[in-house]
Image (cartoon, rainbow, N blue to C red; front, side, top):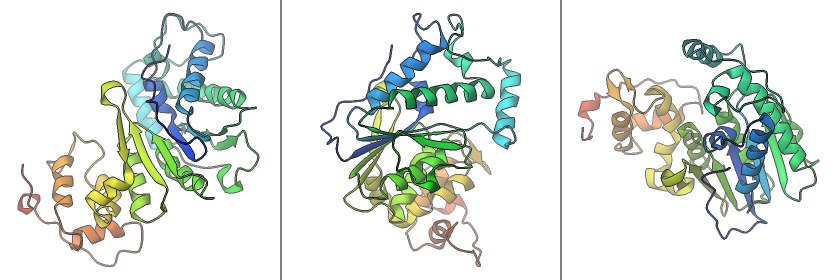
Amino acid sequence: MLIDQPREENSNVNNKAVIIFEGLVLQSMKKTSAMTKIIHLKTAFVRRILCLMKSCVEGRVIFDRYLEVSLKDKTRAKRAALSSAMEFKVHDEMNIAKVSLKALLSNSKTKSHLTELFAEALLQAFANSKQDLVVSCVDKVRSNRSNLPEDMKTHNHEEADTMIPLHVLDAIRESRFSHIDVWSSDTDVLVLLMDLVANGHLKSPTTLRFLTEKGAKYRKIDVGDRVAAIGRQQSKGLIGLHHFTGTDWGGKFVGVSKKTWVSAYLSLPETDEIVRTFAAMGQEEQTRTFQLQDVGDMPVKY
């Protein structure tokens, strides 16, 4: 059984692509009593992707990568140890009648094996399809079409977050699509997409939307509209600001919440040195320094 099906839209199948973060798909799935084996879960996953790609000529499914040598994996392993997460040796006939989806996904090694099974199943399902499919799993990018560029066939990214913008750029490389949807549950992806638009990488008339959440919280965000509303310069600085103020929206940096930091930043004129410095991060070598104003002095309502 699948839940939270995507909304039907009158989109031209000949000029639309969708890029999907597999984590959002798994989060939107509900394990039912009929799913007694891994193959049932795998089939439900493939059906969900088919549904999301219904009105598209091309779909790209991006899986997270689980590197045992990374800091993030060590953090995952520590959380798993604290929660007594169990590693499963997954295969099609594995009995999962008494195993919850949460338990299956709580161990990094188990999830890594699952993603490989799901990726292979997708490629098999689309082998003879007229729709193009691109799948990024582990360190390989595979497709059911033969013209995948050489520079896209391998990668060393750990997370889907940083892969998604690259796939957006590749999808528009030949100007084949005038509409691209990105399905993700991560705010980091929205910030990266806004950076693409703010830096002029997305040319008109291509539109880019960020689709997130599920059920009543489902949202469609036009990335170009958000950049226009916030301002191009402020949008360029969001990546630097996001990392500077901590990753979690509910967290605090030097006792100040991210919401307050962001509100203060967005209230500044685009010519302000703080905005210009954040916007230049990663673009050029920084030779000047600036002193942050006390957030309390900025025109922000607490």
